[in-house]
Image 1 (tube, one colour):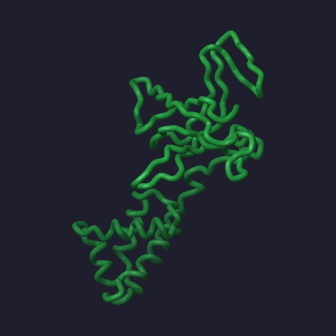
Image 2 (tube, rainbow, N blue to C red):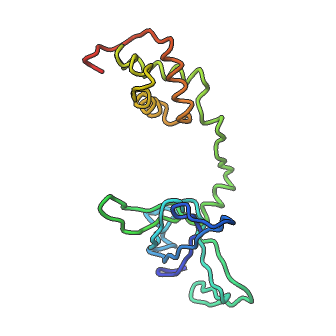
Length: 202
């Protein structure tokens, strides 16, 4: 597969799908060397107007006529030809002012490496902190607020509890759902009696 080769990305841009949850096929072209990789890694770039909701999608070479070109040779099959090129992993260089529409694709060889290396995703219970550790982390965050800050957290009309949740989530590196983090904050707030920082420091 060479530069400018046409590819397709079946995905759900902006969560667009039909009643049967069929994906939308976005067209792309190869924008960097597949063989050499990008930054000496097993990935390459594509030129594609991709959107949020497409990360993790397969990237396919597809030809409805069964034509496949490999290293200068052309092969013909008696049916549609589809070859997995890799997995789409998001765009590069996107800012508020510009979007170069350049996406990243991890080469299909990386999939084989993950399977052969038995690199399994962690389950939720392995990622999330136990309640005791979560509440201990909440107390660490509370030690950086004032008594007035604690009173604001206890006040359901004030937004302070949500700001504190954000600080807690950062402190624990996201190892809890937002709901569990908020519940831990409210639970600790009921009995927390210090230490505090001065009101001027909060």
